[in-house]
Image: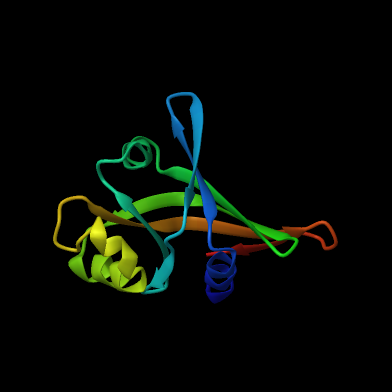
Length: 130
């Protein structure tokens, strides 16, 4: 799990893919942490991405850094506890201008049944289940 987090931290930006009806949707994200052994991301409940995940929790993210890339796929589940929201916002204090752990908008989601595949043009892909 730490290897996944380190890669995503180093990349800085990853792209999260969801589905809306039969149309794929992709957008940049930057929030990620491991909390209680789970890979977590953050968004706002009012955003279309939140509604897309609620309708279909299957997602995939992708990031590229220094000639390597990672694809993480799985399903996302919501963790509405104040503690996990606070941990995410403490990790990304600039988000506190838009979010608060006590508001009704802040949403932390964690991967269930996750698979991470590390790839490059020079090495065989390596897959990690989590």
